[in-house]
Amino acid sequence: MTTGAQTPSSPARPPRSRLRTFLPLGIAAWLVLEIWLLTVVAGASSGFVVFLLLVAGIVLGSVVIKSAGRRAFRNLTETLQQQQAGVMPETRPNSEGNGLMMLGGLLLILPGLISDALGLLMLLPPVQKAVSRYAERTVERKLREAGPGTLGDAFRQARMHQPDGKVVQGEVIRDDPDDAPRGPRPPLAH
Image 1 (cartoon, rainbow, N blue to C red):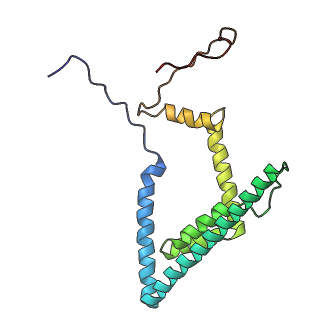
Image 2 (cartoon, rainbow, N blue to C red):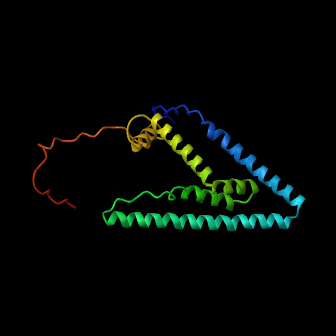
Image 3 (cartoon, rainbow, N blue to C red):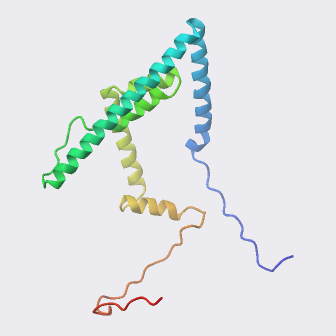
């Protein structure tokens, strides 16, 4: 049965980004490589050595995440106390890198020797500085590409162009302040 109304045609799908295309393939290759490397190490030594390596990675990663989290919480507490006292908080030279240390701890916790090696690399300060600089440059470049405005404008613009229809574009019309009624507003009726 037809009602005479035309069915809306679906808009053309935007092309998939390179990351969305190759990320599943990269994860699958990484998992296969991790399993293969664990079997090679188990064949060269024993399964017990592999088990000890995996447990050591979990324990070391947990210690790293816990210490980085405590340091971040301590820095946050000190900063808030200084702001409440009216003192401008000073920058701490060792306060950066807590997130990267937590990432290194997470990589250590993940089972596998490649992730353990990457996690240990993330604990080194020169690697943390290099990764931090790279991430900062990438974010700044992406924000410049987003156009003028604030970060919220960039997210709002990106959201408006999504074909899911959840955001309705429109404009807000405000009355002039001279036209606004003066005095208290009446209570809302139930």
